[in-house]
Image (tube, rainbow, N blue to C red; front, side):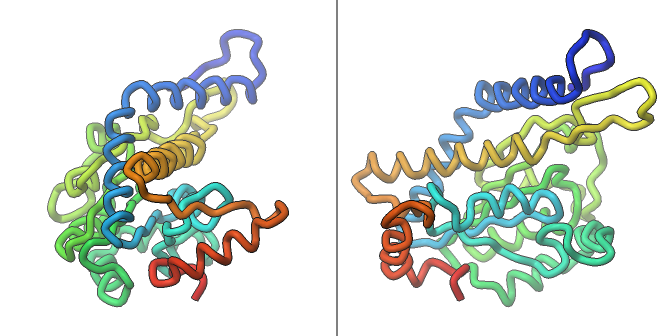
Length: 256
């Protein structure tokens, strides 16, 4: 979904228009799967399971966005992998290389906290590398439910890098398609050799928040009080959160 030089719109406006168009597409075309993902999270919470989110590189931003935040579900934990959760590893290119290493996901899950009955959200824009594919397959083999957030366009227009010949989308209980175009850019411009303006963080974060909102409302509709966090910068917010932390201490891992 690139836009060229036509018209008099400023670049910032062109980017926002493209991002809004993608958000509308996700709203219109992914609503059933958003509902399914939210209900699966609600099922897990109601059954006493724990919730985890994982993303490598910039995909980690959308995973972090649903962990320990005002208005968020307190039970969502970040599954971290050193050198992969964000781009703070040096050199930054090491993170991209680690995503392609066979066997790393199994090693992470072997020593991690996930167990039967838990749920893992795996965010990977391309879904083609070994890490997200193996993270999904090994998690499900352990009895963990998996929600994949990816761009199906990559599976349609690129080749898989895992030896199984599959993508993340092939190993999930629910797949959410972010609809991000190949290359994760939405603008082109004369004089700029490469497409630019990535939109995956905006769209994927919004998609994740839509799922969490669905889970919260689903729990409430079923008669369960969803454990939501309040802002610590409003009066009474810290005290509210402390009560939530105490009640659900066995399902919250980001306070260790």
